Length: 343
Image (tube, rainbow, N blue to C red; front, side, top):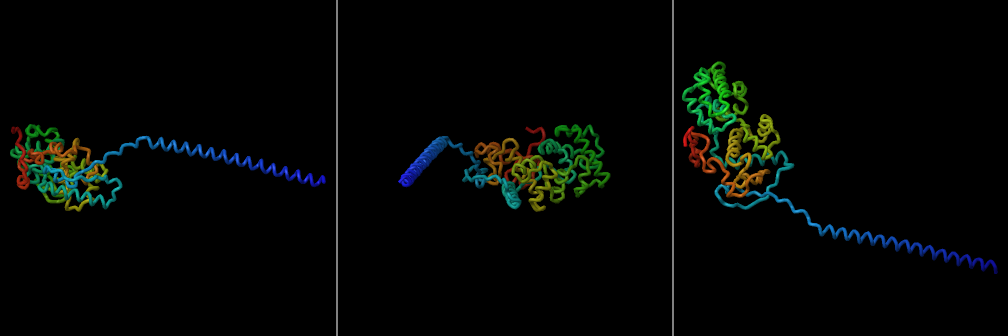
């Protein structure tokens, strides 16, 4: 009897313990469920608050005309988004660079050296004089210089003070006088009074560097060369053809993008574009024929009418830099520059 009662008590105790355990587990589950529900509610509130906040305004993307040559004629062409080259591949860069050159050749088919000259001697002297001044100022000054000293022999024997007086309008006239008399003496003494047609000989002349040498080689001897002047440097960096700043490195980098036969005309196209449209401080982006290919589009004036007012030389209705320009330039509507002291 006692054993049965003991067994019965034990079973009852076991059942009570089981109930208590179940109750604890249920309570724990309920607490966890409440905590989970609280977290979910907080997350929902946070998401709702984030949704209410204003999203940042998207950046405006500069757009350019598909074919901006039309802008020079006063029409408003369709627009296309300009995508900066960024991670442009070498092949894509070559294609874009050559296309820009082709577009510029269409706009400036009459591009030419903007220094007046009749022979290699006049060209090398004029190019030396063009440092730190405009081609126009040089062209207005050289007629009297070459009238008095038409040959290297004449200029080599000139009185420096008389030459200085003629060259005064070009600025740095003392240094330039020393250079042109020095190079004339070198031509007489080392090259029989003739301008050499080799780069290594030209750069030996006083005042003649690679830039001047390539101007002479390309335009007086028909030998290809890249003229890296201030306009050329600015534009090839603006177009992201190269990141170099040293003229010799720029010359090498750009030379690698084009066949050698294109180098001289390429120089004219880029320099003409820099002087007429793609100015240093305020480019006329709204009148630019290569806007869709330019990663710097939008740096200047994009409104077509306002951009037109920024155009210089024949595009803006003003005379060019030469007093005696080629006939092709005149046929295209270009106007000769006025002589020194005119108007």
